[in-house]
Image (cartoon, rainbow, N blue to C red; front, top):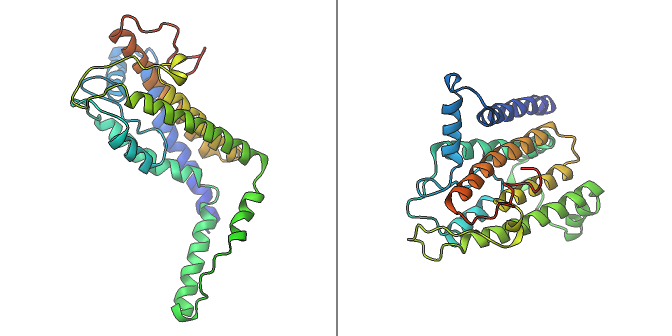
Length: 262
């Protein structure tokens, strides 16, 4: 029964990701204004824009929430007029529910089945007859020894992307020395020499690592990665255009998010 539930969850997740991707793709296409193209484009641009009235908090990125909280409080110095668009907030709610489910969709039925078994055993036996919890450190190492080449390569790519993202976030956070200032400065260093949004590029690298670590057999993970690419690419293009309009001396050699591509 749990296996059937797990199989039913994966198509629903894929449909959810498709429903999230389509508006972004539509906003990027030259749809006539009469057909709602301009309204859709303005709505998504408002969500992904950066500047004095709206500063995009990367809700589509997928990092640990605690790290995001730490960076918000201690790394980034947001403008006093910075606001998160309601679409960004709703996207974040959807993302942080659908992303973990997608990453765990293949093993979720087994985990639920194990939890149900433990609860049933506790109800039948009672606390007094349950075995004491014993943790053997050697058993904790066995899963690492059983990892395949895809998991190790995926982990290496994940760490590589994470280190660059931390560095890029530190650079962005150092641009505004005073929290009460609205002044913007051209970011430089690390991957900023190549693209305008290297923290988004690092996010793509991070999720590529997770995709490789999953073995590429879980369809929801592919759709999750497609959503991350689409969403961050759209936001990066808008940010890149803002940089070009804001700074006359902005480096024209930089791409938006992926070198030599976009």
